Length: 258
Image 1 (cartoon, rainbow, N blue to C red):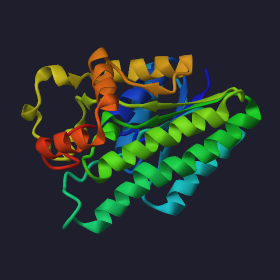
Image 2 (cartoon, rainbow, N blue to C red):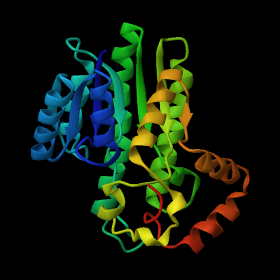
Image 3 (cartoon, helix red, strand yellow):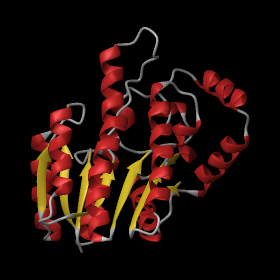
Image 4 (cartoon, rainbow, N blue to C red):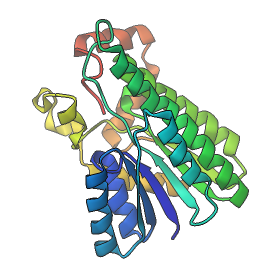
């Protein structure tokens, strides 16, 4: 069934992507910083699904390590047919007065790494005449919640441009724009889940299943669930001044939407 490379595979949506792809009989390349978790996951996937599971530890804020992942994407042997650029995090801080090093790290992981890895994957896939790139953006891309929103807005627009460029090559690009999802993401960001109603939360398995179905159909922007589809349409129609006001009322940037 081919090979999929998933970044941020040790937790959250990345972990769910790894499991769903493996159980669909795809070999997987697992990328994250936590070697122990990756090795444990790889062993579980091999045992449960009988697939090849490669472990490729990498800190995507480090340019040399990003290049190692890019080289795997260029590899002709066991080529990668699906790239899932999922790695990301929230600092949970406002921008002014925050640790600039952490902000730069976010930019490297959620923007630069997506750029580099998409470039490597697209080149190899076009040569073979088939493949897919799935970049995880967010509903936050439509808001004004500081650097995180900006990073995810870049991912969405970049992916739309890439999809246009890839048209007719046999390769597709999809931007996944989930809303609030039950994962470790919010715990790590220190977000109080009780601030949001239960209806706002999505389950990771449903989000990933919808995303992979949209990839198969060649959908460019994937927004799982009807409720967030409506939110997206409303946000698109509102003037940006209203979006800024709503973001200001909602609270600190980078604390809200995955």
